[in-house]
Structures are given as structure tokens and as C-alpha cells.
Length: 248
Ligand code: G3P
Ligand code: MG
Image 1: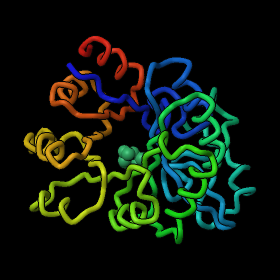
Image 2 (image 1 turned 180 degrees about the horizontal axis):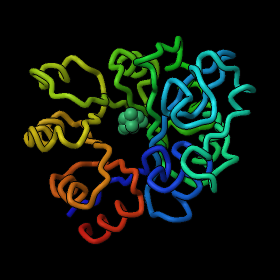
Image 3 (image 1 turned 90 degrees about the vertical axis):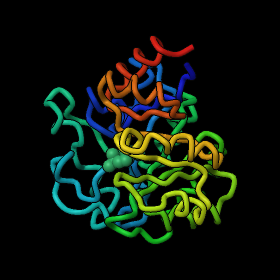
Image 4 (image 1 turned 180 degrees about the vertical axis):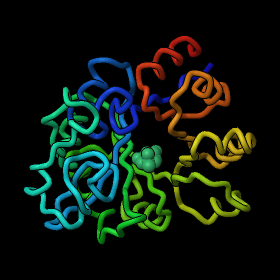
């Protein structure tokens, strides 16, 4: 069986606070993943930062939207204690810090542009500039639920791989992707079980099938059997164990 790329979703978020430096470090220490998936926003003063939600309540001790915080203000927030008191003291990383980490560890990075609730002006070019400055256009691939953003990204930077995230079935998906200039598709895994023909359809268009967020053994096995190209999971240790058991 072909081994897909194995990515830790928001770092090793099944065990550690999502998108925290600790969760990224633990991918290296406790798993054999090929890389990580993470999410990027822009602060009030124009810094690119790593965080999942548009607002900080769920995974920090603050309130309000990232777009209304300066970077220095965001740095004061604790992004670990919400998960467990033992993880207190984790602080938000900039995109540059995450790129440095991936460069050093050689982990692949699937960067999700979080520009569909808050429409961050110029996020695509900012991401391109940072990745290019780090010399990592081959190591980073991007995705977004905002498909207009992905279209713009590909036009601005043809050498980087782009992907269309989606979590609902589409009418005439074959016509939809024909109009798109994206390299890859990033479906929620249930959609491949609902429409099993999609894997072959995407592959026939030369697109990779990068699926998420597959957290249990049965569905990880199912996605590997279907021949997907990449699996993104919170349970990065389990993901690697199952892939090792099933794949060449
Ligand atoms: O990139 C896969 C996945 O991260 C997309 O959804 O909400 O977990 O960022 P979300
Ligand atoms: Mg994400």
C-alpha cells in the first residue's frame, strides 16, 4: 500500500495545546510525521501569527479578535493553560518563527490561510514573501476554504502548491475544479466516503488528495486504502503507527 504524507494537525494537538510551540516540538520528539498543518492570521499591527480561530477565547486566556490585537498584546496571552494547567506558559508564534522551526527540523508545512471569516488584506502576498525569504517554496504548501484567495495565490506565486479546502459536497465538482487553477484538493475525509469516485477524479486531473482531520484508526485505515496522498490528524502518533502497519 502506498504511504501517504502524514501531517500533524495544528502540531501534535491531540496531546498538546494546538498551534503552540510545544505542540510543534512534540511532532519531532514523539511522532514520525512528515510535517505539520497550521493556520495563519494577521494582527492589528500587521504581523503574521499562528493561531486557529479568528478570536482568542477558546484557546487562550484572552477575549476578542486577533485582528484587534497588536503582536505585543497577543504575546501576553497564555495559549497552553486552557488545555491543561501543566501546559501553562505557551505563547503565540509568528509565521516567521514557525518557518524557522520547519526549516531547522525539515518538516513539511501545510499552511492554511484563515481568510474566510476575517478577510485579511494582502495575506497571500505576505505569506509568499515570508516563505520566499526563507527559501522554502518547496517545503511549504498552502490551502484555504477561501478559494478566491487560493486562485489569487497561485497567480501571484505559480511555483508554490495550492489546495482547496472544503467540508460539504459540491454540485458538479468536476466543472468547479476545471475552472480552478489549484494544484490540490483538501476534502474533509467523510466526503471521500460519501463520493468514493472523487479520489480517482482528482488524480485524473493531476491533483493530490490531502484529507483531514482523520483521528481514529478505522478511518485512517480507510483513507490509506482509498489511496489518498496526505492525511492530516490530531492524533499524530496513531496516524504514524497505522501507516507503518499498512504501508510499504
Ligand atoms: O487543513 C485542514 C483543517 O485544518 C481545516 O480546518 O478548521 O481545522 O483549520 P480547520
Ligand atoms: Mg487548519
